[in-house]
Length: 434
Image 1: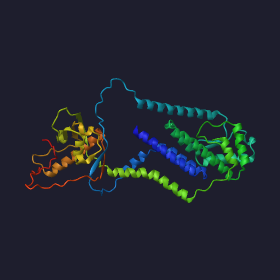
Image 2: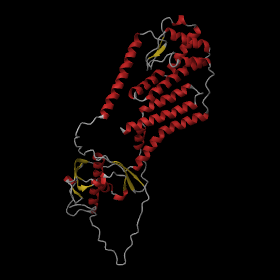
Image 3: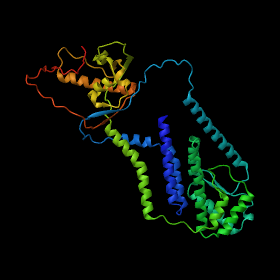
Image 4: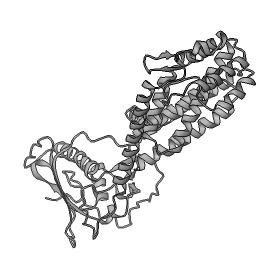
């Protein structure tokens, strides 16, 4: 649900930015504003998380030092048994999903009904069809309008065909079907209709039609014919008629978009696409590399209360068996970091303990009676990556590595000399069980 809410507020902010840009460009071409509003509509179909995940697939050369700290971004126990509630709780996600599906089906049925009406009704002049649009003219239109008015109506519809207005309107209808509950989507739809009709009106006036004759032709068409109920069937009587007539009669032409404005729009467009992509690249570089080894079968249980021994040792078929280990301790073993380097884990990840046993995805050769140090280190490295896979898949663990300044202490030898013992020649990790 968090991903859905993030997508909705990000798309809403993007639409607000487009609204500000359209206000700044209110004296410029309406077609430019139309494309901006269309971008705001299509943004609802393209979540920023998709661009972030695309950037996360880009791997930069590994030229950074080893990690100093591991920040836990998310960890949860997918396998934890949930006790049965005393009474059935209301399933809000299921209810919301049912409402969303019902709303989408209602819109689809309504648009299909409108399409059936369009086939049988007497319509205004309009362009019908999405991929292969055709211009339909009601019978008797030529007798209703003068030659100049008829040419103006044809020029208006030709502009719709030239700019693929039916196709772009159909794309926004898809957005409305999926996000019908969001009022900003319907507001964008109204802005799209206003700007596309304003652009077609300008195209007619720009070719030399007189504003008075053109305005009268629109009024006469609206009086004689009904409007298509389909939003993706563009015609001459769309948008607010009174406002359009007023704008036609006072039309002075749109101002050209300056080079500075074009540069600002280009920069804003590149930023909207590249910033999430770059975030994904940076996030990918800060994540520890994915494990190259996995597990075949894993068993996870809550540890028996009162246990005092915690250890990791050999498991079935060359895997590992962890006893009474907390997720934070397992993270330290799996990624080769100390406890103070793990930051941001929830409290239960340190207090709760689990018994974990896994078998390798690839058969591990049993170590001999006197294995070489390299063999032990290689086996430990492979099983550590398998533990990483367990933490990722079964605990939902997501990590991010970063460099931090941490406090250090000087280890000074006492006057009587050190009391340190020689290291284990086999290099077994701390807590390794026999």
